[in-house]
Length: 354
Image (cartoon, rainbow, N blue to C red; front, side):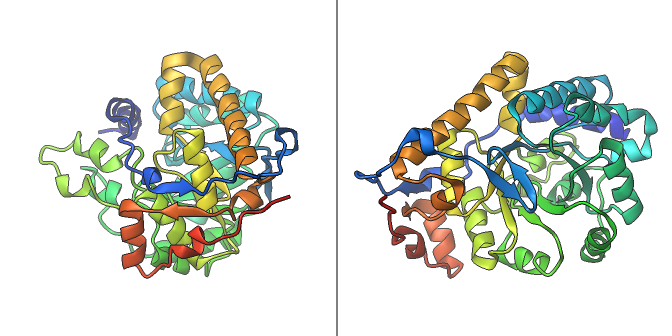
């Protein structure tokens, strides 16, 4: 099967499968603040990914490209939405356009639609320094994602079967390009062990890409004669993965992604330790159902609702939201406890008053 057809299939199955809401956010409860001493007018949503300044912690995460006209139209619309909302946007894997120059336009259109915004490039863990430089030049990228997708590749009928040398290749890219590098998991979660290894590199951020969002094992299984069903429920839930990453590093930007759909999910992800929140599948669904105007309106509402919650919690900015008390229960609590993480470090944080 051609890479172009595979990219088109991924888009189709992502919409067909949807998201199951298994990211763990139901296990997180804020400690109510009856005396917040706050004002909605004072709330600031500014955040950062490394040295990149964001007007909102929300950004449009990697989705597609390289699948012909259909992916061109999706990226054109997403680029327009990013330009109208001021959100950063990441493109899907650009390897398809590096292998087939006719697919470049399916990625270049994002920069054309969003000439002054933050656009993030994307390549897989097989990428070389030359690939990285081509991907950055293709869209004038402000940063580059390197995605880790071992489970997807193993489930993919025509996927990779050897994953040696990944750490070294990422290190070569980091030391050779002139933009920040983000390492991203693709729906199966980053563990403490993985984040500890990655923190030795001069990357700017990790995107934990937790379990609970678009399930690429299920998508690839749709394309197999004999399904590897054991991979369909493989991975670390988004909530647990955020905490695992935060336990290891205070120097790297932590990006939360994986089944995030509501402003409450966003607030909880940040309060667990995320600096930014990437949304892909939910935005794609809205784009298909409601068009660019509907997606723009939803993004505006997400930002507005996030400010309402921050006002209720008595915090003025993202840094303060990361330090409010919350209680972790359920599967997330069980997982973190078994992994040796003390969840009372979250529940006993002090509410800021005034």
